[in-house]
Image (cartoon, rainbow, N blue to C red):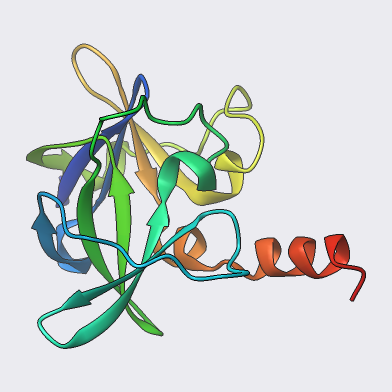
Length: 153
């Protein structure tokens, strides 16, 4: 058994996880500065001890329903090839140790944009854990192309 530690978080009714090795930190809530003309999934930028970090709303990124008014998301700051990115999630769960050999490919039932971002699934005793591909979740090139087309560029 090859164990892998995964930081879990919830979005809507789903449980997601990212490898702990890619998580820089987890933060309750920090003020976000909006960025004009940014892709829809970008909530804005935040200043993390002098480092400017893009905040991506994972509900928008995965095409899920918007958060209720007054619900503050949490930041899961992950390391990417382009630098740290904050994934805005509903709630952060536990760090779980999963059997890497038991991670299966994403089932056909995962629809829409989420399908490309889910690297695999792991069966927990009471629910399915969706393993997020951090690189694909943070890569907003698909949204920038769509925004350019919408603007007629």
